Image 1: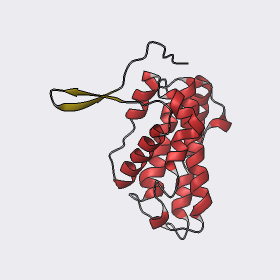
Image 2: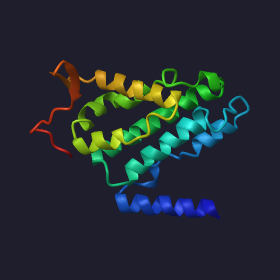
Image 3: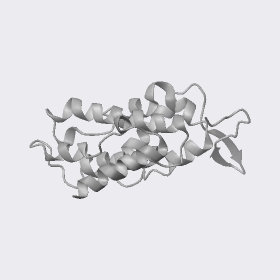
Image 4: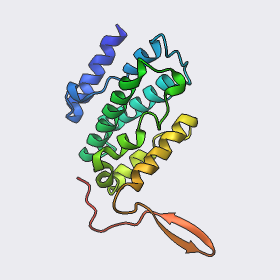
Length: 180
């Protein structure tokens, strides 16, 4: 009965925010990975402790008002990429093999350059910053992968300035930045 309510909620959110059911990545996929004989990583392991939680948080960004349409498309491509990468190694791997680097998180976040565009919009940057990056080693590794992906963009996201002998990082405001 609960599954029917979740499906109804997903369909309702999809209708309200304009996303079709085909656009939704099933975060229950990570439960299936955890259930595999070779995986049994536990609630703090990669499938449940990171994969499912990250999937649910990005789904909330996709279904909510906090990101632009381009930002939502980026989040969806990140989810699809991560699921594809887990599928590629989960049947022949174990918990120790699942890491941000092994699963190519930087490639997923870069999303063929989409990150370079969506990060210019302050609402997208803010929405991405609200993800819970500091929960565990896996989350920290994934944050480092996001930082690596940002470094692939042709323009710097951050500028630095020396203020009284202390180097400060800031994100400059660009008057030409539009949020589409």
